[in-house]
Amino acid sequence: MRSLLRLLIRGLIRMVAHVEVFGRENIPTSGAFVIATNHIGILDIIMAYYALNRWDLFILVAEKWGKIGWIHWLGKQLNFIFIDRFNPDLPALREIIGRMKQGQVLVIAPEGTRSRTGALIEGKPGVSYLAAKAGYPILPVAITGTEDKVILGNIKRLKRSPITVTGGPTFSLPSLPSKDRDLVLDQYTDEIMCRIATLLPKRYWGVYANHPRLKELLKIPPS
Image 1 (tube, rainbow, N blue to C red):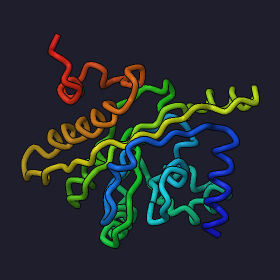
Image 2 (tube, helix red, strand yellow):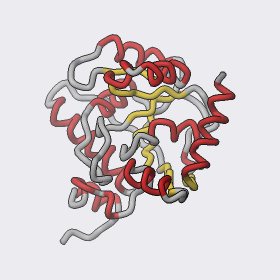
Image 3 (cartoon, one colour):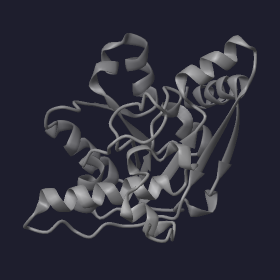
Image 4 (cartoon, helix red, strand yellow):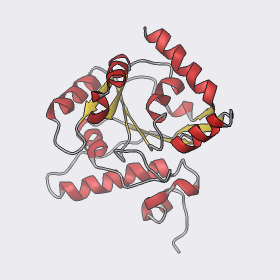
């Protein structure tokens, strides 16, 4: 079933898009890690299965999508974990930690939802909490060209959309301190989002366009 699904996913994406993948050399070859990516369109959900030739991935998806029959079925095949974005979801958290201890790869969008503008919106601290608590390296990934309106518009014109998927160098976050945890989590979240931003064209930087850490990473002199 999974081999058939991979063929269907790749066939579907090739029908509607021309995809270029950059930074494969940055992907860890063993052990668990976290893929943190921006989220600009529904197609993002299956891009990991297109870009990576592996099945030990699992993806966090908003709980509301699990109530739709065909998405729920697809989620079982593609290792989705349907998670409550607005309340503490301890069963999901335990499953995430358990899977990563088995060496699986977590795919998550720190923004928590699709950006309606295509540019980065404010990240949420969930991914930084998981990464810092468990000590797994983070692979920042930037996606361009998957905006829903762009994909649908090009399909109507029988045109394939150009999509890029870019992986950056992995990095790790220090363990969480016992004090000022919320402040540190915010800093860790900004670090993740700014690392993603470095891989994106400037028009995608969104709320992080003037962030000091992004300028530091890109070696932009202070204004």
